[in-house]
Length: 127
Image (cartoon, rainbow, N blue to C red; front, top):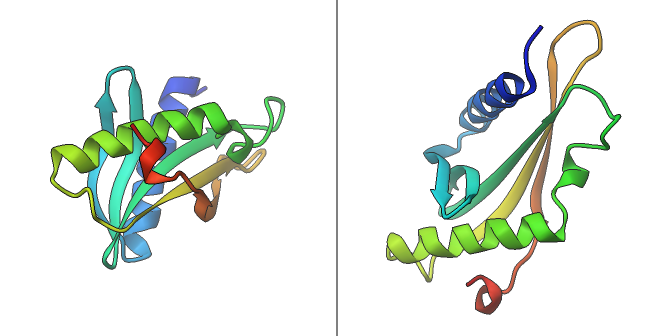
């Protein structure tokens, strides 16, 4: 049986493969600042995309996308602002996506729902 930490790591790897198959160019994974993290940073054309990956084996703890609440969104936005500042990309067009992964009961296969522009943060509130 796969533990939750290992399942989450496998989910992130599946998310990267999914994004690359859609033509995204992955720039970074598990980008950390302080105690917060962005799972995937990628380019979709000219747009920079900050991706939160949430994987669930079942719905007993709610939907994966539902776990990206306002507190989590604010945390992601602060890390994104740090990334933009550190890379001199403050004026870069960006968005926040959520990839929700669910394990299909009995099969172990993952179903991926991609929520583009999942939430918005005004830049002045990012830091």
